[in-house]
Image (cartoon, rainbow, N blue to C red; front, side):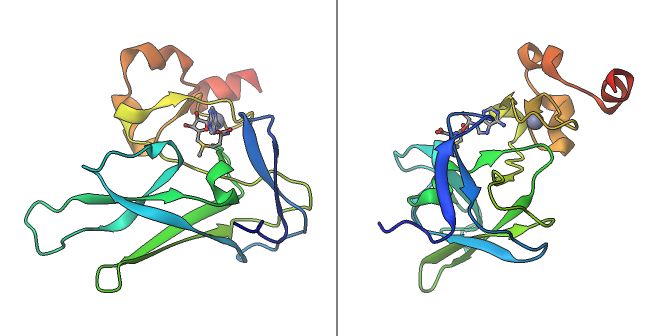
Length: 167
Ligand SMILES: C[S@@+](CC[C@H](N)C(=O)[O-])C[C@H]1O[C@@H](n2cnc3c(N)ncnc32)[C@H](O)[C@@H]1O
Ligand SMILES: [Zn+2]
């Protein structure tokens, strides 16, 4: 797969490998379209590099099976931040069975900056966060599910109150 123009995979200060932009990007711009392979939730696949698609396999089904998009290009390495500079959007067309994912800049991004988005994991998938943002929640989790994370992760939480006290 040819490298995506303007993006580079590097060792990241957040975690493992990450992705930096080689060019400045303006707020609101589409940063990149990601390629991938679609899986149903009940398939045997590795969900670590997958996005949950907005849509399901059989929308007429009363209990539709969620779909995942296992990223296969450089977008696979984009890390999570609690104070992200991009957001990801997805679409799924059940007729053509084509999935699309794209990242949009939430603010101006300088050349050399690491790209990140908010993974917003469900509470049962929550994990410790090392995003280094001053607004880091301490745990990768959707803000609305923060109260439902497993007890073992609760000591890692950095609430708004504790963040203010530390500042
Ligand atoms: C899509 S991969 C991102 C690429 C990853 N850095 C790597 O080198 O494989 C997602 C995984 O990266 C790790 N990760 C990403 N952002 C993180 C963060 N802010 N804090 C801790 N781990 C993170 C988690 O293990 C997560 O399951
Ligand atoms: Zn964080």
